[in-house]
Image 1 (cartoon, rainbow, N blue to C red):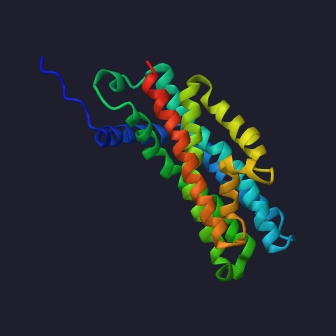
Image 2: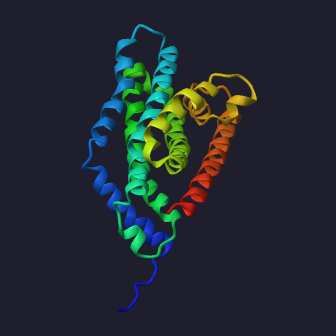
Image 3: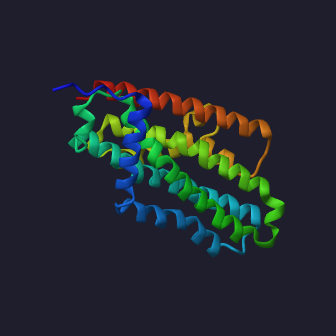
Length: 239
């Protein structure tokens, strides 16, 4: 019998991503995503008497909490199940780069996450500003940047934690993001710099300085790189 050739990293990532997306569209996690994504809109609709900017800041705070829950629900359980139960036996029966397991999951699920979290900001933006949306386009732009860059950073944190503790990846990721990373985000000074939720919130808040937004993007990229390095090193040791 001729041995099957090993898959390349890109080929393996795309193949795994296709399977992951098919599975995700069939799970209850998708419905959880719809519910979580709608929560900021409920807040926006219940606080219409607040000044617009104050109300938007409240929407962003709720949105950040939703981000810390939705990413683990969509991503951590998917990674944890594969590593803990080895249900996708194809992964282990044909040589492929171990890191492609992670990139395949991220390739499939991060765009889905972006869609949910973009909707979670877009709906409240219309509700809060109403006919004045044209005058607050910068807020929406910053918010969408926060969706893309912050979403990737939170996904990196979740990926690393799911590889460190596959069986409890979702619970551990939610607990870390809400109670550790979220607590760090409340501090002033240098300690908040290591919080991905802090920088994501800074991007989505009303602008104070262009430099502040650029700094948050750099920090998010650096933190995402560090967490993904942990994830790759861990999965290379996984048996």
